[in-house]
Image 1 (cartoon, rainbow, N blue to C red):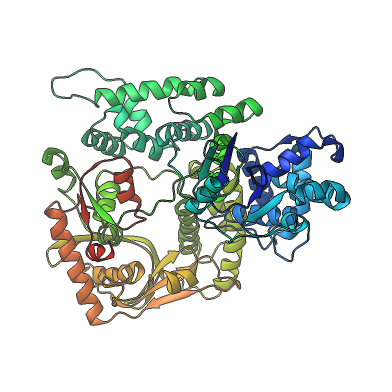
Image 2 (image 1 turned 120 degrees about the vertical axis):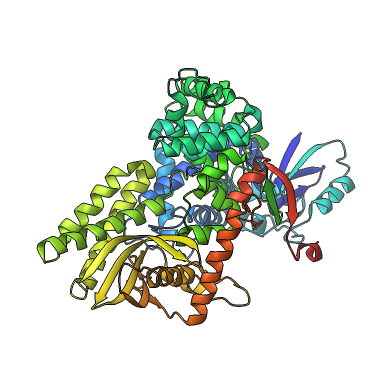
Amino acid sequence: MKLTFLEDEPILVFTGITIHTLHSFCEEVIQDHPAFFNNNSDTLISPLEKIRLLKALIDGFSSDNPLKRYRGDVYAELHPLARLFSFMKRNKEEVDAPGAAQFSTFQQMMQNAGKYDTDDMVSWVITAFEQNPELLFQYRERLLYATGTPNRLTQLLEARMETPQMEMHAIEEKIEQLGAKNEEITIISQDRPPQPRQALNILRYIAAEQEIPTSGEDLLFEIMHDDHFKIPPVEAAKICRQAADQKTSIRAFLQQPRIPSLFSTGPDENALQLSSLLEKWMLLPLPELLETIPGTPEVLKEEIRHNPGLTLPALMESVDLIKKLPNIGKIKTTHVFFLSKQKPLNQAPEIEKMDPLFIDPLLKDFAMSATILNNYLRCPLAFFYQQLIKAPMGRKENLAFGSAAHFALEKLFQKMQLADAFPSKEIFLEDFNAYMKSNRISFTTEAFERRMEYGHRILSSYYDRYIHEWNPIVSVERTIRNVFINGVPVKGKIDKLEFDGNRVNIVDYKTGDYEKTKRDWKKFAPPEENLPEGGDYWRQGVFYKVLLDNYKQKNWQVVSTEFDFIEPGRNGEYFKEKINITPADITTVTQQIKESWERIQQRDFYTGCGKPYCEWCNFVKDNHLQVALHTLPGEEEQE
């Protein structure tokens, strides 16, 4: 016998050394007493199938549904809804919760798909016990005790409840007391083992390329750093930067025909072999592809066998969403498939220094901007990967949506300047549509439709809110360059300059949540004890003033810097935030510019910040690219 437990799952202990999870118990009751249950041709839903149904449920929410999200984690309700539906089935009762109204819709979706889940089995057993006291009594008299959170089933069984959550060692002790030493017992911690990253990344990449070519560049960049393919990191960096300089994709760059030359070695041979291998894999039918790629989890192969019409993009999307359901798929270990929740180590990774012949030319005409300054102060490795070698960012839905809104506003004011009157709202939205369609690569199918709907809604309201207040004397998308601050070359591209004579108000458009930006993320905050370098938006606002104050070609007087939020708050209100810039702020940011520039010129960008959730520090650690790990100040005491 093999039993699989999750450490927070209810456990039922019966006489005769019988230990059950809630679901394995119900499965046994149904198998042993089929006469009490309707013959049902439906099949047990897999964890990945359940994910797809929950996703479809959320995608179908109407715009007035309080659970509908247009930004951030739009599928954040997956886990809460799954837990809510599980509770409703286990306890056979209605609840007063926002998602409860979706329960009947989800059950109908399950029925239409010919599926049931393990919580349905619990519900069926509860009904059978309530309607057949003699059946209930058979199990009630054998039950010794139960652990976990009480529910309707344990109430019917009149279970004596142990502590709500037993530690794993306590469970093991009780198993030993019952004499189950020879049983095969598996206890699965919430701290699950890592996924087979290499196989999943390859499958994600192929899925992205099948859906929209070149949309998986970030995944290809990571695959190139997998030590299995033996591509030196410096060669991967060169390929990435050369592709960016040619304004082409890494995939296309590696496929370019090349004539051998004494003066050009071309891309690394292992990188070319990887490219050839990936192109061959892309042509394989899905079942064969899953069998071919080493390390592909069996659960994915099984999913395709049960759902032969499933596409690879849909399969991988459900894989990536399944981490939102920490307690799904409990009965068999083969159905447990989760990301590790291990706490990241707060150590700053250092990567190998690159060849000066590669790096030095990249810094030859380098100039500081507000984005570069913010990135470098946040993490030098972020600066290295994003600004120097121009690592692909992949699908960044939020950035693309923000750029579409920026583009529409830029065109709105440019057309106003040409016609001496603002164009209609319809023309404004047409420009938004045009940018979204031309950047379709940045969105999944559902995300594109969702963002189009959301963009029309918020931009229409934004237009109505400000159409009669906008200053028509403006300069939009103004690029400022050839400016020096204490000998440091600086540049910037400013969304909008509003003029009152030579007095200037700098405007920067922002998408996102204003309240969280100000209250939680403190992006407008000047330097303080817990934020010694100040918030990113505060620094950006001061940077722009310093930039224009040193712009000798114009006699402009910057009187204010303003952040204009295009997305409304929770009550539909639009916000603008002006930065009150002091002489001390100017001194601080000027010093940050100078010190960061000097450190960059000294090639001080090979060691990261070490923050637990830094994208690039974790990229280095996950791919074992570090040559050293540096413990952060204060971490020694915590250990």
